[in-house]
Amino acid sequence: MTIEIVEFEPRHAEAFRTLNEAWISKHFAIEAKDREVLSDPQGKIIDQGGRVFMAITDGAAVGCAALIRMADGGYEVAKMTVSEDLRGSGLGRMLMQRCIDVGAELGAPRLYLETNSSLGPALGLYRAMGFKDLAPTDTPYARADVFMERRY
Image (cartoon, rainbow, N blue to C red; front, side, top):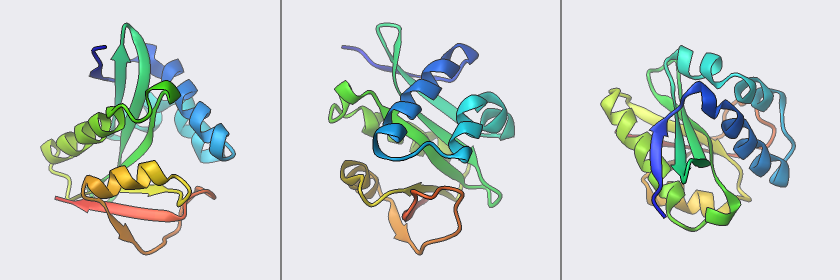
């Protein structure tokens, strides 16, 4: 199986929303901030200076990740997920590496993310890829209880 990570195009909008709704609704409740971003990735992420990456195999979207531009010039890694049948395949690592590489190309001082302490495999990946824990901060997400960054 060949997986290609490509830049978001408008035709990916439905897959971006569906992939994210699947994992969020399995573990948590879909929140207002989720609906806002998932309903308009072009306007809420890309048009604001961010990027969205889609993992494609055999023409189907099987994963995604977003870089949302932050006020400090950094980027928040957000809406990162992999199809359930491909979890553990290394695809999450590929998506995160793309985020790290693009953050460096964009001259970001850091990548930031918010997650939940119950998502053990995700936390393991983030720590393995150089993310460090931060003190809790204000967030629009009720589920976020772990805050991390990776400095360049």
